[in-house]
Image (tube, rainbow, N blue to C red; front, side):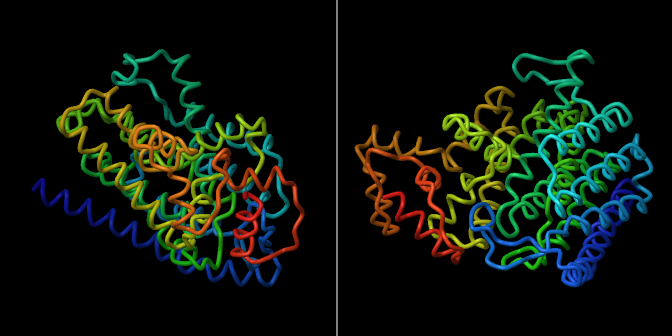
Length: 413
């Protein structure tokens, strides 16, 4: 009887995933035609935007519509507390994101919208981080501390996802993987409303990703990235409470606060990396630039497709390693340390790894890269190539993506 119930629940979740995928898949061509008719395109600027053609940025409309429609129609969603507040929060982010995609809004206005959406689900839906389960020696935390911690988490995840939306298929693919992983664990532990929540989002993203994967015919824009980051943050917060569930604790112990950090490891790592770089250069952290991990991969010669696939694989490997260590019963603080160490090992580190290798083994990493990729480097200056370009402050005529990369290389040497 229990197995039959599990099968029925699985079928309901599978149907929700498929329906969301189909709605998103068929909605995108309609949006593209409307964008073409009204000339609503994102034009390349050869600075932050790396595409070579004008492309619509309204894919977030399809993600929003397919997720909300599918989740609202699923009978399993009835058990979610504060559903009306979730809808209100999504509507705020949708319209603010849409306006930003069309006419561009200031960072302050977008932050106000994000804080408003967070407040709705925190106070109306009781989405709250109230227990650290041993991380930093903390267990339950008082309400006055839980509220700002939850606000901070939601805002960071929203903007982390927004920052990785820089090449074809990256944000959509990372979001699909993360949401599927969250959904599988929610389903296994019997949190069916959150399970269908996760699978509706991953289905909506999968349908969108068909059109967004390189070569992309549409982008998700700020509408999509803010909604995606917001929905992923809700899943992460709900996931953190799973260590209080016997079914989860029997397998992973108190690892529920750490596994979301691994699942969202790439966007969180990239955000921290960019912030540190810009603070070090005394630049505004809100200033756009080509200093993200995916830009590094493009400069190494990866295509949009291969860079996205590589980052998918790195993200999955980070989760796999963390999950394995949690299964082996590693202490929760050591587990957090392993996530940080693994992230430093897997993702670019502003030259830290090559300096360590040079000090330990006397290996000239810059010379190796020069030989491998045919690029000359100044051995006394390991500054990122983008920084070299920014410091040169050169105005160039619009060129192709490959010519832009070659120009950056020329300036760096």
